[in-house]
Length: 232
Image 1 (cartoon, rainbow, N blue to C red):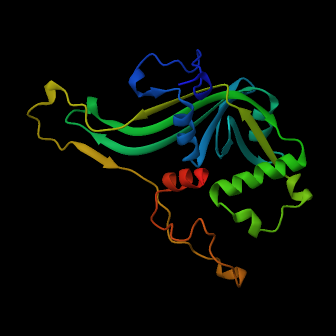
Image 2 (tube, rainbow, N blue to C red):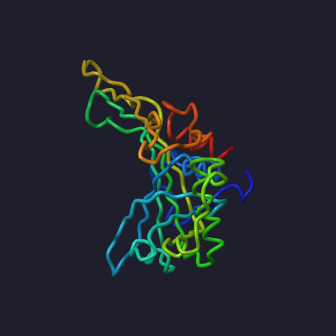
Image 3 (cartoon, rainbow, N blue to C red):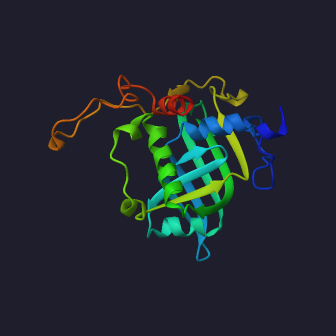
């Protein structure tokens, strides 16, 4: 593996416990990010910690999120402050025969960097189009283009990933010798978010066909769909 395919661990990302669950591999980090819809952005505001949930998207080692131009949750992270962005999938509830070995199967990423605003309106337009394409490949070609006035009402923050780490817990129960003989149920309960049946807005009148990315997607796992769209 060459250096360009990994995030070199620093003090913020070097893991000292459960190292077997950790990866600095770029592909592992990107897979978890690209299959997540919501991230949490942590930063300091007036000396106090703030964590903001937001939809986000990625291009290379750059992460983006957006919101209202006047929002504090956008202005502060875009001011160059250090940022920690996290994304998490919960894949299962792990039940053991003692409380000590109960756990959760998960995939998570912690990414660190500094935010900056996307000031150029055309760059902002391209970034927002990329966000729509992440969720609905081919969708932007069907839509009314966003106007300059609308662009000015939206802020987009960009963060170059300086350090990142992926952490995964998968598998079953880690039983202990002391649990032998106890009859409490043990095992894994899978957890997933799935796409439901599309519900057209009847108030809008005649509509075109369902977006191609959503046709036949009912019942599909959201994380699997997002990852497939990102790789299409």
